[in-house]
Image (cartoon, rainbow, N blue to C red):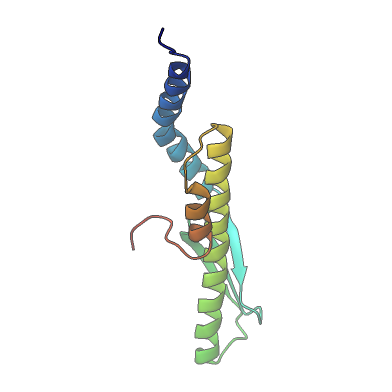
Length: 124
């Protein structure tokens, strides 16, 4: 006789896969509402991004006058906020996959790469 016991697992997997685009859209919309912050070490610049890495605001201490130091502080604060946003995005995607009981080979590695400097959107 044939064993069709695995078909239920296949149907469950297909059902989960069909939900991924809607879940990703929902997750993206949620992350767009979150605020992630980064500051320069000297505290002269504070950057706020949303959870998908889009800059929302930049706050510069009015006493910061030297342009080269200010430029460096802007870059530093932006990079810190960007790194935090990427980490948050990777955590949210990982949690979504866990909640949906989706096991994708290599997903953890991909998310770790993303969190350590990969691109969130695939574009510029």
